[in-house]
Length: 255
Image 1 (cartoon, one colour):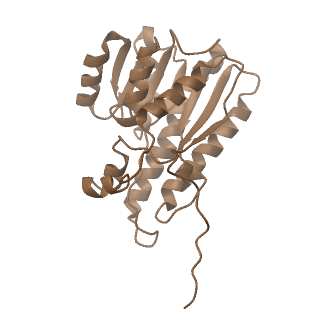
Image 2 (cartoon, helix red, strand yellow):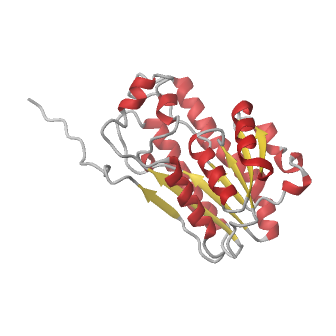
Image 3 (spheres, one colour):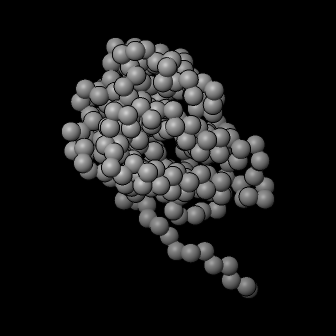
């Protein structure tokens, strides 16, 4: 069977962007949603919007001790998590590696890699014990296609891809699925504003003259992969808007 209607989906980074869109779509599809994020005020607003089908959980995925206690800290009726969406993640800065801030690198690794694997390790054993479940990781085309300034962010997303594939190898013979969703240019979220330290004008310039993907497109993709029959595992989804494509290799020519 699929894991959509009637199931419980745990979404990290649910206070805005992809996470909020996934929460809304999941409730519309008849699921119960555990919406986790650091900003409790945003979660409260989402809970007021979506009603009792959503359980807000204030959580920082970089807090390893709190993440480890998650399975036992959830209300009894919410513990049988069917789908984990590891959505929490960020990019910081776009300077070249020799000028980038080491603190930004550390935060990207802590959130995009360490937070993701700790969340997975906390909830995966229960899925395996029930012989059903789905781990959906939000990767990026940055894990496949390099670009100037993408150094550590792209490296973290390459990790997400390989972790997802290796996790699937571990789970052969179980009813637990793993999918890596890798979007390209997506507007309508806080991604670029966070990357540029709140510089909204610079963030807006990233999308000028384009028709990018939207958070709702990502939510639609999540709904599709988790709604497929239980014997179907989508290993990886790479998606871009039609205004985007991979480019040629850079060449520096001597004058």
